[in-house]
Image (cartoon, rainbow, N blue to C red; front, side, top):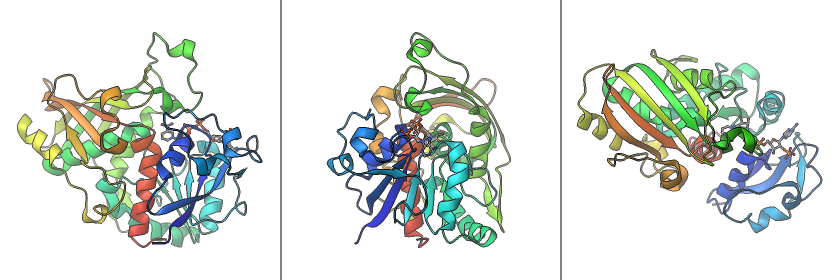
Length: 349
Ligand code: NAP
């Protein structure tokens, strides 16, 4: 197969670097352009980027010129966007209008009624919004988004529970890694020997995005899932991997072994089965009392698997458990690449 030309917008930051790493030797996509701010444009990628990943920067990326983030700077079919949200609001529609499929990590368009927040193994059918978006906005391309990094693994888990038992309410507490704040992110003197019990604009995302993703596409819009989520979000001194502890009130009584089975046997829809990024397994269930842990378990399924453990009765509601997912892979670049694979498979390019 001839590879599809793609570009990475804001390629020098925490998420941009993950894109470069994950797109290295991708079977379907070939990176033809890298962008960043005007501060970096004109330099080669190796000069412009302070590479912080534990694998070497791919050779093909080192000499690539970093160009400005504007339509006309390059030609490609897909743009992967790791833009800061305010810039995404302004720039992503220009690319969609010019015919690019924009696969965005930014929060800017996630809650727009004609823009899907996609998690392929949960709501592949929400791709149907793309046609509505194109009609409404007159775009030849489109914007599709992936959820905020904390919502990603939580939503996969809630989907399996909702399908099997229904969900009436959720309370979650997240312990979020430093890379979630970008690079350089939180100052070391603020986070060493510490937990910061506040992440700006995070709690409302965790309370809303899973309900949109688990919603139903009815005629031309999403009916949000009818349960509520109360979220607490905290920053902790972990490099990668967001841990979320949650309690859920289910729609019906369920024994713990039944809940474990529902999670372990959860299968993605057929359309996901041949996609290069489909996690294997989708959900890994741990029986050990002290797992999952970020350092040990975040790379399961190449960083795309959702890990769940500590599944036990909740004395107030029905069940409580701990979920781990890799924030810059599953919750950002990897999720976005997975969405592009789905869109390609669905014939949207
Ligand atoms: P980051 O490490 O701070 O990187 C910011 C990037 O944006 C850099 O490449 C920077 O380029 C570029 N940039 C800044 N201003 C720009 C402009 N005016 N025009 C074009 N590019 C510009 O941030 P990040 O963590 O990668 O986050 C990127 C996006 O992904 C954000 O919207 C974030 O909310 C979202 N997200 C992040 C995560 C995560 O785990 N980190 C997860 C999900 C979603 P220069 O190097 O030239 O300054």
